[in-house]
Image 1 (cartoon, one colour):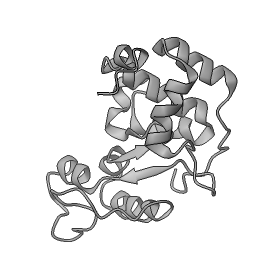
Image 2 (image 1 turned 135 degrees about the vertical axis):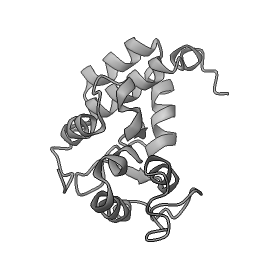
Image 3 (image 1 turned 90 degrees about the vertical axis):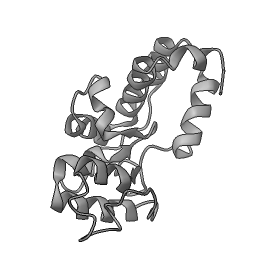
Length: 163
């Protein structure tokens, strides 16, 4: 998995219904979260999942091993974002240094679930989560739903308690 291109199937009604049922919320409430995270689209125009590479997470996961050689992708401070497809350039550079830490240091898809949080989703590893997300937005929403439930954020969301 190096190009991250997938089927990029859009969110289905079944996927949306499963998420709202699991979260005990409404479609507009769920869309409020999704629109904040990714402006409502889990894929880039080229069919790769929307990502944001977090250099401070890569720094943590690699114990700063690459800070001197690549401070733009490994630093104790957040930042260096390029946005859109350019985030994949940063990710690919990090993959060349440490694949596991790199994919765990990006947030993925509609809900922008960090790769290192895959263990609280049904996908268990970042790689399996990404593989599923490459197929379609239903998997994006499944991961987001699993994350919200695991972190006990489903109840405040159902109450529309935005704080």
